[in-house]
Length: 552
Image (cartoon, rainbow, N blue to C red; front, top):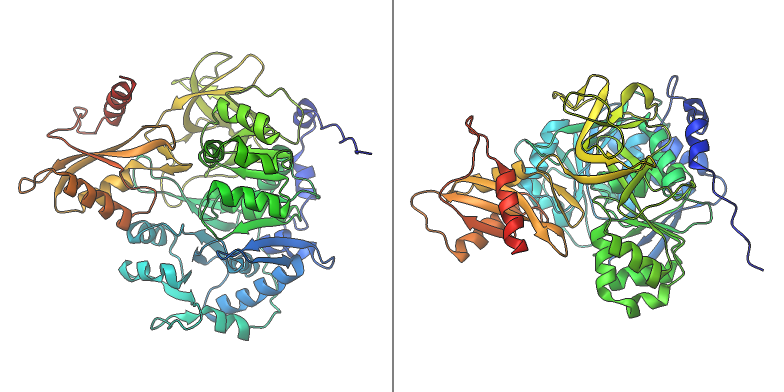
């Protein structure tokens, strides 16, 4: 006899009865007197042989780790870090693929009261250099596949390298595996306060270089609430968030969030493909899947026949990173038998507007959903006045009435988005009459490509480093597979002539210097760029012209 699932709590009740004291009570520590993220995400779940991590290697081998295993590993890592001179409040940067050592590094960093900084493995030296200088990282932990990039980073911190069998240790590096094996499995957690940091993130660099986003320990409550209310994570779920932990959605909600709730997470070291995704869903019995619309569109493109073998397996699917296409929602319902819900957030806030899997409320296609309990979301006009339904404006957070909100400003940089008691996201939206939020468009120049948010300034800066380039402007242009692709408009130096070969050379130059996802897939050589009287490039005019051209 099939057990009837319990009815979901009502969204309206969750809003009405939300108390920050209840969220604090869900933690073992207390943000006011002492808390440690490794205790919250690991130690308190030990002693029951409870599964914490399913890790599939690039070769397809499945390894499973309990919370007791992760406690032992994090303690050893903590002692390795201390031996390297890392202490309370210091920053440790990790540039590793989705392997068990990555989880151990993150937890070990938190165990000793240090701050973890993610570095996406596709980053090039320029992107790495800026982030390390922003954070002042004391140590970088990487593997040999990524180690060479650090040779091009000026004043690089000390490096610990994970070697494969037979590989030689670079001069001056710490042999991570040797040090780990020799380290004691006893390492006392260092208690911090709720406003102390445990992560140092970076923005996408929309209007300048990426800014540092300090994440305090109090953010744990918001991360846990998202997993509970929006993901709707249950103790019997097999959870897999396919986002890379080099980015906020992966670090916040593929590692921190599920482990905080004492529920196992899933790692797949291999590259994403539709076939491998279906293989893993079938092999592990995945019931809760999270990722980006780009990944989900690739599943759709594989066709109904490929999906048939896992139809009905997924209980819920969660989508974040860009607005979810209605056709994906319909396709998932028809061919996977799974409800897929759109969620919205930012590196600066985590997720805060969702179609909640864990709460009962109307779900309308094309809507980002409702404010997560613990946040009061408003729509503001240019004068900072709150708007009502069907009035476009800027999505903002009412700071005083959002007890789960944790972002207080960028690291050593001004934060003009915080003013008048609100944090403005920069995204243009409007309220629907039922209180849900619909997107109209982005108010800034950020490019969303294949689920990645790309700031044009970084790409332009990398282009200008090339001797052929005098000036450059970068925009996102529509693409059916990736939502947008990066297009560069380039003014060449006098000694150079535009050609297909030079366009490819510039694209590869950016790819090497920046990252494998942020390079321009189209390069157009121009004689001038549209600018304001003060000399600022008007990217929106370039973008508008490209949209019109593609319509024709």
